[in-house]
Length: 104
Image (tube, rainbow, N blue to C red; front, side, top):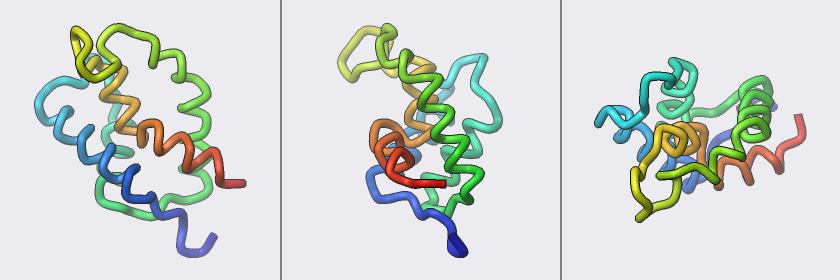
């Protein structure tokens, strides 16, 4: 796709929330530069390449188990957990639905 894949509004909002959490120091020690870069890309509504979409698809396949961890759900103890910060940095549930619908 010549113009890339532009994240929808919900994905951008999740990225924006993740950026704030990262700035607030809630991302944890294991948080990667890649995750932070992705959060900023999505928060800013930047178009993603096919390769970046593939990386997002792979992230969600590997990390869907994180949703069962303590502090993942709003209102639960420890919210937001580092896993939740990372999940939203990659676009959250909306991001997963979005990239799952893209054939690359």
